[in-house]
Length: 179
Image 1 (cartoon, rainbow, N blue to C red):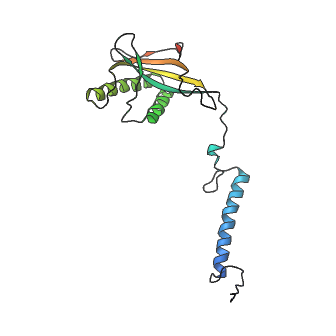
Image 2 (cartoon, rainbow, N blue to C red; image 1 turned 180 degrees about the horizontal axis):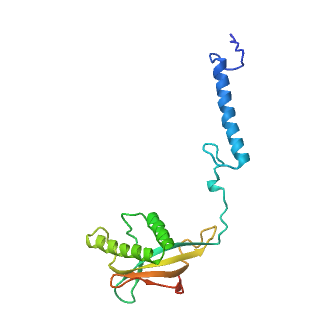
Image 3 (cartoon, one colour; image 1 turned 90 degrees about the vertical axis):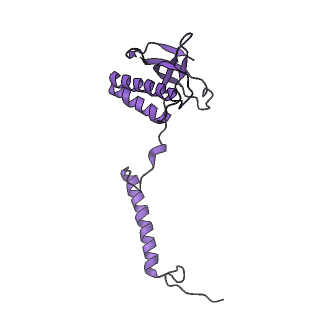
């Protein structure tokens, strides 16, 4: 059994400058992380990755949801599902932005949603029920860590309704329903 002696204690065939280069890179990466941690700065690639480290202490979850109002007995309210070409996530985000911009912007988004829904239904791009109005609700429910209330809706607060026949009717947020 022959033994190959390496003066730097490394792998045979690797020069001393390469070993020092690897050690220097390791020291730079480790040092960068330590400096960013000490300074509490997020500088890529040395960030603390705090994205998922915050604890959410909210007791309720709420979001904006659209419902379509059908013609007929009691104006049955159905969830407007065919959001296409936008995904439900994009639709919710646009509702949040429109609400932040004010009632006129929100009224326009709801009106456009109603026209788009009915146009797509008329062209048979979805099989949803015909609707004559769109309602915007803030839906909220308590957060349960075991998700026992995942299938329940909780409270609905009517924020605005847009009809195909007239202008939007903003609501003061007093109409609350429990489902």
